[in-house]
Image 1 (tube, rainbow, N blue to C red):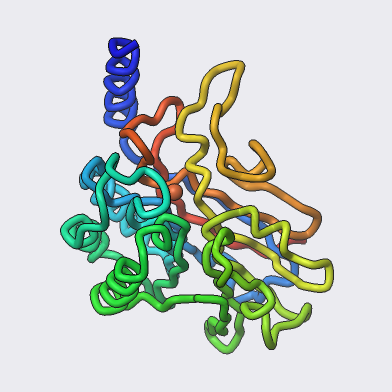
Image 2: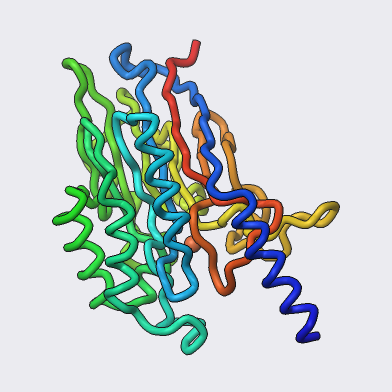
Length: 282
Ligand SMILES: [Fe+2]
């Protein structure tokens, strides 16, 4: 059994190293998108899971790939570190500033003319209030990150605008799509950042959300032929595992993320850095 586990870990290292980070470029068509936002690019980065088992090389590579495309906006969707206060205690250790510093060093190149926006993931919350404060402060100071904790703001470009919303992690009691949506209506394009794509379950019909940008499910992290992903932390099973998913007029893009959880294993599921280009739907 130990031999099997060791082989699995070895294959995981190999798999991750062999693939590196994959740059995923996707075009998403949105109804009523203002003309000035046609061709607008958003970089999406998620689930770095900085910890003692993280690979800083993957963070560097993801940041480099993103900046090679000069995105106009950058969205960060949580799980920056691996928390251990709820689960995994002892397996990956408690929050350590040095792992956050390693991540910040890698991400320090991230810049975009219309801003860098972020929400928090379940592992950020599970790491405790001290970790949340450290992440929030350092990301703002070092990267100029604007946090979207159950709120929205207008993003303007040459006199036209879309709205950007963000919620706290779906599994936290502080998550509120209603607070995030306050003041918005169905007359404008609304893009939501939510770590967990299960937020779809909280969107009522009277709310207009055109696009949700998420991570969390890691593409399953381990994808087995004929079986799929053995473990997916979603009430919808494999539905929101990765890529673009449509629910009526609403679309959700789920990135496989950069890091890994529990062990540095990714099988048939390479780490991802994403560039999304918005186009107006016909
Ligand atoms: Fe995650």
